[in-house]
Image 1 (cartoon, rainbow, N blue to C red):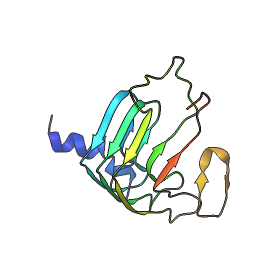
Image 2 (cartoon, rainbow, N blue to C red):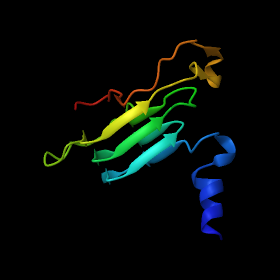
Image 3 (cartoon, helix red, strand yellow):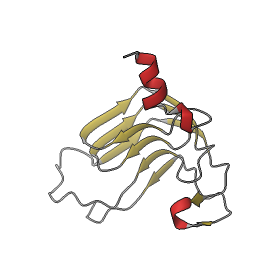
Image 4 (tube, one colour):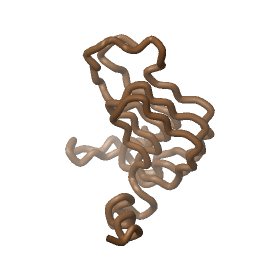
Length: 138
């Protein structure tokens, strides 16, 4: 298997996007650190924390995110309403985002989610950092 062919067709999915890929990191785990990365030119998110816990995102440069997204293009996002089912470890922050340089994160296309069958006709996405609430105490 050719390394660059796998990156081109599987990781970045260039056949589906005009510029870059969709996400750099889609975090689903515990005690994850994303640091010292330059993340740019993605249609969705630089770092998406879906069901991760004790996730640290620090000292990254994140730019040009969400320009070609129909919805949800953000620099760093904690995305879910997930209960963990056990108590947090008091020695760790559940989420720790700091020291990141984030710029050029903006939606340029009206929001449209095809499964919802309608378009808001507003530019309502494109936050540098967005956190959804969780169902359990934080």
